Image (cartoon, rainbow, N blue to C red; front, top):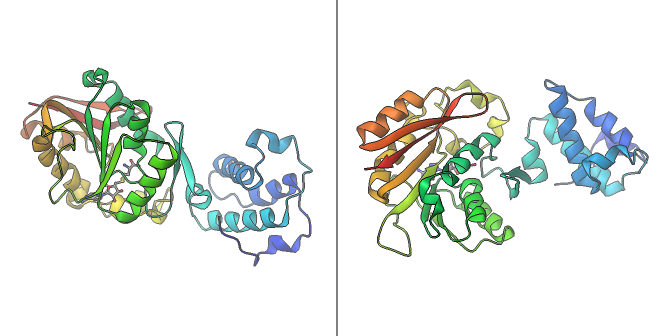
Length: 298
Ligand SMILES: C[S@@+](CC[C@H](N)C(=O)[O-])C[C@H]1O[C@@H](n2cnc3c(N)ncnc32)[C@H](O)[C@@H]1O
């Protein structure tokens, strides 16, 4: 977190945990309970006091540096910056992922594709080759690498800044079964390093919003990298491109799993079938929305 002393909060000579919470919570705009939760997480991060213990130590006085960081962080959140960028990390698959504005903040919804990959019949095999297209922070690929130390994961992204974040995350998680490559899926994508055969699993959470999608102005998305979010052809261009190239990158009987928008299921399933995939099916998130489609290479 950055520091900035130019803040009205700095005029207090001393401020306690409870006063800091009351001050910051008073700025709540729309979702009061989310704002309140995030302010508690922020103060916990700044002070090193667990969120649960903040209320056990209401009179603990913030050090002047903590006060400065907290005040500036609240200002950034008031301006619409997501908490994850402000504190520099978020949780995904119960793991800690560093993030910065060059990567999409991993969403809980995306855990569905990780779960689906772990439930595939091939997941019982000790060594399989997995390709994570558009790895970003590494959320999907690194979670699989963590769960399955004998799997070999290749993470690809066309953003070198995103790959630098993924590399830091792989390092922090102590993963040695991952290779990260800067490639564009409109150009050549390499086969697995340890064999001339194809991948057994390919996954992607590619950009799939159309450029006029009204979600782009809300949910903090305006702070996130546009090339991670938006795709041509009403959001379908990258999904179609990945289905097309996956045919030649997958082993026979290998699986392709794609996250997509809740209203793209029919288009994605049809394209899977037209491209020669079999056993095509769709998985729904907890809210019942169709969010992951998958098919087997035949
Ligand atoms: C929606 S983000 C997903 C990030 C991460 N997998 C996750 O689920 O949190 C899509 C990612 O695809 C990458 N990307 C977009 N177009 C690409 C292309 N043509 N080739 C390779 N990567 C691309 C972006 O840089 C971004 O990191």
